[in-house]
Image (cartoon, helix red, strand yellow):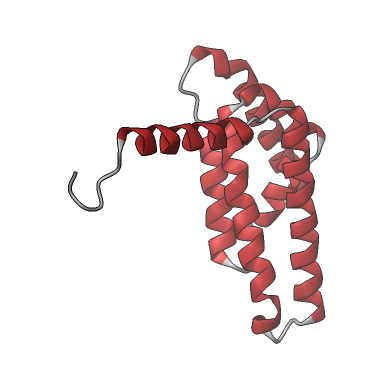
Amino acid sequence: MPEGELTDEQKLKLLQNLSDDEDENPEVLDAGAVKRMLLSFEKQVLKNQEMRIKFPDQPDKFMESELELNDEIQSLHIISTVPQYYSLLIGARTINTLCGLLTHDNSDICIAVIDLLQELTDTSSIDETEYTEALVEELLNEKVRKY
């Protein structure tokens, strides 16, 4: 056998280890996971607001919280794969928070929110329509409340 090549037994063991790793960490997105994500997002928004108030003239002091906020927004994109949980977004007033971030001083945050809202409202199947309609209605209600 050439040097560096795996035996059949080693290949089988390696494949078994990879399979075991997948079984241990399934990516399950249930209502509890969505609620935890929304709570983490809200906490990060508050942290960013606090840092901006505390250090208004020192961007280096609040920049880390803005990067973390951007990461939190990016993590919410996975919710678009489970539109049946859009009611959690509405109930937790996350739509209100997202709309508020549209006027954030950091344009990267604004763009991240726009991308997220676009993905959440993009219907790729008929089954998602009722959930998306409720989300769009909430977005419209937020606009009405602000003006």
